[in-house]
Image (cartoon, rainbow, N blue to C red; front, side, top):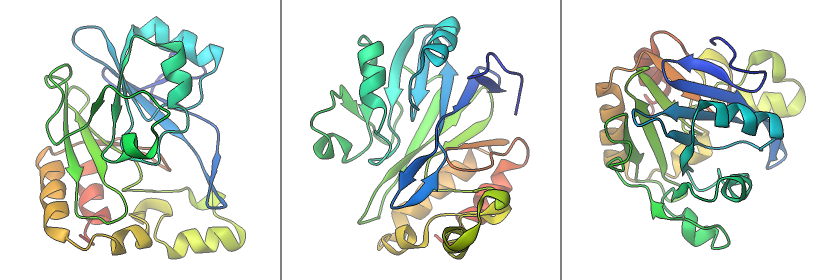
Length: 234
């Protein structure tokens, strides 16, 4: 996926880094975790969907630059926010739509919208996938590395890890391998498809070459086609 800045942090593309965290349970299913860090033009760090903090990871992150923005892309990716806020209290923390109301115990400074915050607008674009009764997700585009950053909307769990009954269910849900997509129950919650189509069209208009996702195999080449196929259900 790129050269390793440390055992905990790898270069995904120019000025964009990723780190794999522990597997966490989600309704009884094992979910690997992954975060992304973009180094902005001003030298500050933009942290997406942070994983559990260790001293080794914190040291690698601080070697890149100061943590200035911590972003949760949807309302279920909040498990480790408090750890990051405690370690980097000066960073601004951004809530996905609906998350601040769900987690009043977490300090948020702003809610993400369809337009990027001025602090990272020159480096990163974004759009919200609206129209679902269950959850809205913010998808990002890191310009310098030409990377779309997607959380739960596209999942591509490795075939080798999908064993037994739970693996079979993950396959039936369309979340495994190169053809991985969106959980079927989440798809069904998009009663209004028009705003979701508009968001998908914006993502495709970015023409991303790379795709960085939280759960499963990322893509280094040809990401626009992968995204188009994965979100064809919309």
